[in-house]
Amino acid sequence: MKRNAIYPGTFDPITNGHHDLVRRAASIFDRVIVAIAANPNKTPMFPLDARVDLARRVLDDLPNVQVMGYSGLTVEFARKYNGAVIVRGLRAVSDFEFEFQLANMSRHLERDIETVFLTPQEQFTFISSTLVREIAVLGGDVHKFVHPIVEAELKKQRRV
Image (cartoon, rainbow, N blue to C red; front, side, top):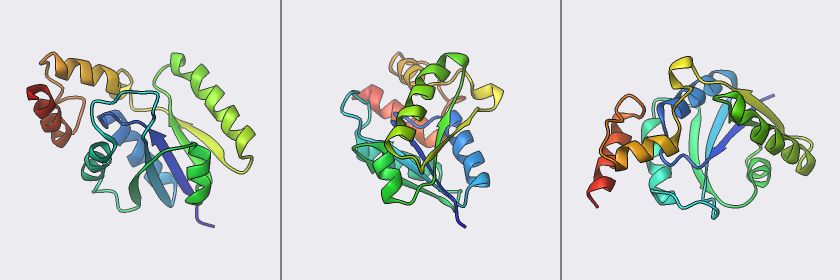
């Protein structure tokens, strides 16, 4: 049986930590869909289509990974694309409570979809999209935290 995984998030922007988790999920599951949320509760730096494009370009070396944008409930997206598993990343203990609540709510909404937690490699545990955006906006160097394609796009945003 093929196992499809959905890795949802805002990915504003995609970081090296995200890339690490996608790469490792791709080695575990037959297919991984990186599901980039429109998320009306957040005001992203990059519009949805730009976040999807950046993620596709960064992850193009992973043949069993697909990147798609979506709106609505993650479990509905997972159901639509035959996702048996939702992958979530945990950087620190502080992430756990929120992620635990999400996993339980997802299970309540769709019993057949499991949530799997992955932790990033140690060098990526402190990286968040929020911090990367803030550093970039203030003119700091983000090359250690993001792919060069993302770094270039962040520099363009700063000039706008």
